Image 1: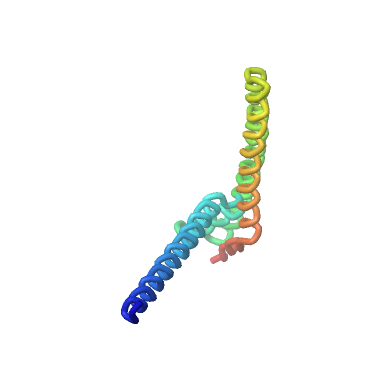
Image 2: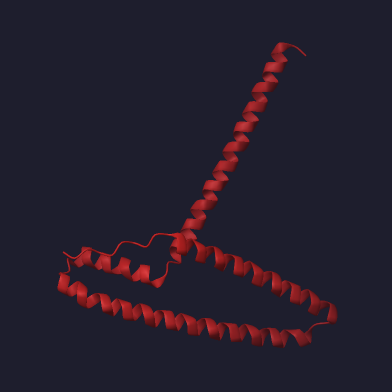
Length: 149
């Protein structure tokens, strides 16, 4: 093989490695961006009400007295929302259990085994997502409290 052919092979291999690396890095950055968007949309309620209070302060130029009166209203609304979310989650779990109980008698023995595996896999996926979101929210810094004016 001539030195020219060898040089061309080296250039091609280098370009191939660079392209593959760029694709991998782009994919990882895209994955991180997507993960941040998802978890940002699922902020915990206390963060949401602090952000809302900050926006109110900026938009309405609240006095410290007004801020002091509005903050407990937002705290109460946040707690009520948390309780409602817990109730809805409980009701949804009951509905899913009723659905499963109605489906199982309609299946053959072989289908029941596959259905149980199907449900176990689905639950494992949901647990992983919930765990990832919970871990992210625990590690993420809370937004700073708005400053009185």
